[in-house]
Length: 586
Image (cartoon, rainbow, N blue to C red):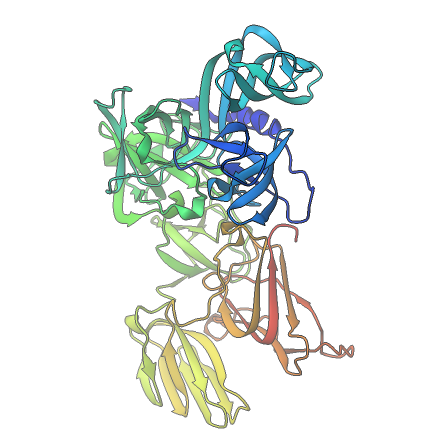
C-alpha cells in the first residue's frame, strides 16, 4: 500500500524547481531533452555545429526553453538553467500545453552536507551561493564537474557547477513512462530482482509506471501500475523490467493501451480501499496480474476519481475487450431521461454525477439489475436508474448502405444514423413511423442533407429523389484531433462547409471552453445550424434553427460571430464558415 498523496506532493516540489519558460522571442516553447536511450546525454554547443565546443552534456528529461528552432535546419537555440547554446532538434520533445513531457529527475546528495556553487566549471569560478542537502543534476562537464540546480537558504533557485567528487548517491527517477514490449506481444514481465530471472507479475502494454531507478543499462526499477497520483490510498507493485520495454518520451495519446476490460463478478469492497464499493456489473480495468490476483483500476484517470487494488481473479469477468488509455470501453449509447438523478449505491461509491438533466447522449459502460453505469466524454462515471433511460443500440454502421425510394422496416442491423440527401433541383422526402416524423426538401437550391436516427422497428418510407445512406465512421466529416489536448496546438480550425456529429466527429463542450463560428471573409452565403438527431425520435430540444451569418451585420436575424455550446447527440452544420475551437481559456 502506498500513499500517492506523498508522491504527488514530492512531484509538485520537484516541478517547482523546474525553470519557467523565458519568453525571449516570439515562438518560445518548453521542451525536454529526449534521447531514445534515457541514459544517453545531449551536448549543448556554442554554435549549431557538431564540431563546436560543448558547454556540457545534459541528461534526458532535462527541461529546456527553446528560443529559436529555425536558426539552422536540425538545430535549436535553447536555454538550460543559465546556459544558452544549440542542441539537435531530433533529441528534443516539445511540451504539450495540457500534458507535460516526461521529466527524468537526476538527484545527488552533497557529501559534506553543503557546498558552494561555482559560476564556471573550474576551482577559481565565482561562488554563487551555499547550497545544502541534495541537488538536481542537469548535466556533466567532462568528468570533474556537474551542472546542477538547487535552492539556497532563502529558497531561491540557483544554477551552477559543483565538483563530481562533492556528490554522492546519484539517482534518477522518471515520473511517467509506459510499459511496452520491445519484442512484440501484449504484456511486459515484471521481475522480483535486478537479475531479471524470477517473474513477479505481468502487466499489459501501455500500463503507466513510475520509474524509480534507470541509472543502470539493461534494466529499470518501476512502480506499477503507476496511475496518476491521487489522494486516495492506492496499491502499487514494485519490481524490475527490461529497459527496452519502457516507452518514456511520448504523450498519452501516442500509447494504445492493451489493458483488459472487465466487470465486477460480485459486489466488491476493495481490500486496501475499504471505503470504495464496486457493485456487481460495474466496469473496471485490469492493468496486470500476479499470483491469482488482478491489479485493477476502478474509476477514471481523467476525472481525478480512481483507485487501484489487487483482487482475486474470480472476482472479475474479462469481457475480451481492451481498455485504451486505461478507461473501460463503451458498451452502448443511451439517452438520459429528464431529471435523471444519481444512485448512491453505497457510501463512498465513485458515482460523481455529471449533473445532466436534459435528454443527453451518454455511454453505458456497466450494468446492474436496476441501474446503468454511465459516463459522458471524459467526465467521471455515474450510476442512474434504468427506468426512463433509452438505450441506443448503435449509432454508426459497419458498412455503408444506400437506399432510394421505397418502404421498409428497420431491423436491428439498420439501427443508427442515416443521412438523407436530395440533389439540387430535385425533390424528395422521408417519413418515419414509430415515432412519426417527416424529413424532406423540395427543389433545393443546393444539395440538401439531413441526418437522423432510425430505431429498430421504425417504418421508413422514402419518396421522390430521396437517397438514404447509412452513416459509418468514415462517411461523416470529422474534425481532428478528437481532443485538442492530444496535439501540441491550443486550437483546432476548420474552414468550409460540413456536418459534424458531436461526441464522434466533434468533441462536446465539457472539454472545449470556447467555440466560435464566423463566416468566411467575402462569403455572401454563410449559414449555421445546430440540431439534435433525436429531435423527432424522443422530443429532445431542437437546438438552434438555421441562422445566416454575414459580415455586414444588420442587427436582424444575422450575426457575424456565434459562440456555441454543443452536447453529445447534436449536429453542427456550417456552410462557408470558419470554426475555431479554443482549448482551455482560449
